[in-house]
Each structure stands twice: as C-alpha cells, then as structure tokens.
Image 1: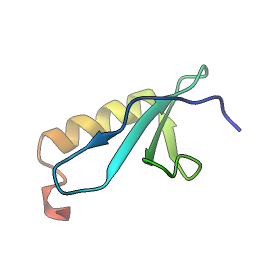
Image 2: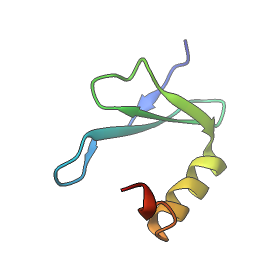
Image 3: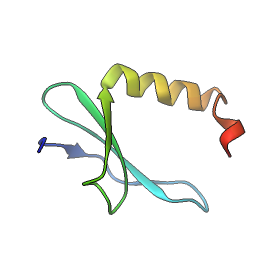
Image 4: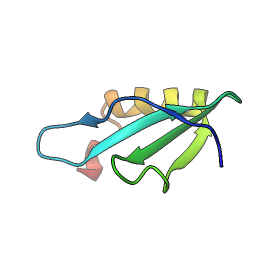
Length: 63
C-alpha cells in the first residue's frame, strides 16, 4: 500500500467530507473522509486539472 500523506478533511456545507493526499512518487489521492482505504488515484497534474475544472463550473451539472 502507498505511503499517503492525507490533508485535513474538506467538508462543504451539507455534503460529505473528502480528503486529498499525495505520496513520494508524485501521485495524488482523493477519498471520502473516514474511508481513506478506498481512494481514487492519479497524477498530481490530473488532480490539479480536476480541481480547476470543478472551480470553473464544469461539473455543476452533476449537482
């Protein structure tokens, strides 16, 4: 299993909390807080792109 360094949980108002993490190999991780053993992983650049796109409103249709 990867040695993941998790950030503090991020909790939006009225929704589930999630955590972001990174490892020594440059991978990024996203997990629901409390379920960090079931994570999604990709490169740090992919995570940056995902966050930028969400902030730009490109995932609003999912809400």
